[in-house]
Amino acid sequence: MKLLDACNGILPVLGEHTVTRVDARHPTLAVILPNIDRALDETLTKGWWFNTAQVKLFPGLDKTIALPNDTLAFLPDADFRGSVRGKKLYNNETVSFTWDGPVTGVLTERVGFEDLPESVASFVFYYALVTTYLTDIGLEPIVEQWREMADSAEELATAEHLRNVRYSTRKSPRYARYRNSLRG
Image: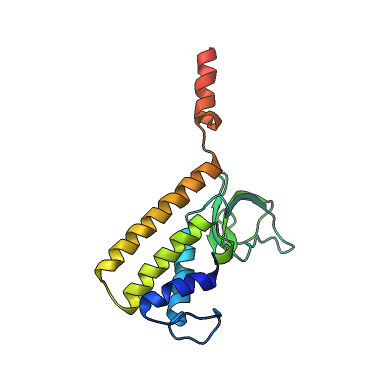
């Protein structure tokens, strides 16, 4: 879904005319675009198959580990003794930002609206539509229908996420221990 299509899907609901460019000087776009960005960040922070990756972060020349610019979250592996502070990793053992070696973990990145899979873009669109309508006009009966559409879109996105991640009991360490215990 294009950002322009999302904006033009929201504008008529608010009683506004559609636009030909997202960067047009339109006062209602000043309300819509931040709502889309907020909905996008809240959705992506959960971590999906397309915006998370297992990474190994290495210290730079100054021995600090800087996170990539579009990082929303970093979930370190179990041996991590630190925290995320701003755009850097803080080492709790040395009480500083310096690190002697690399740190591994799962990185969650921000993805642009137009790069989202269609199911997730649809959820973000409906989420932003509800938020914008509530901000601009207020609570009306139609908002509940849009919330239901947003919930439906989230269910589709979650189903697609589960298909892509391919969770399996057979891959879990707990299942391996169980199988080993059966062998005796």
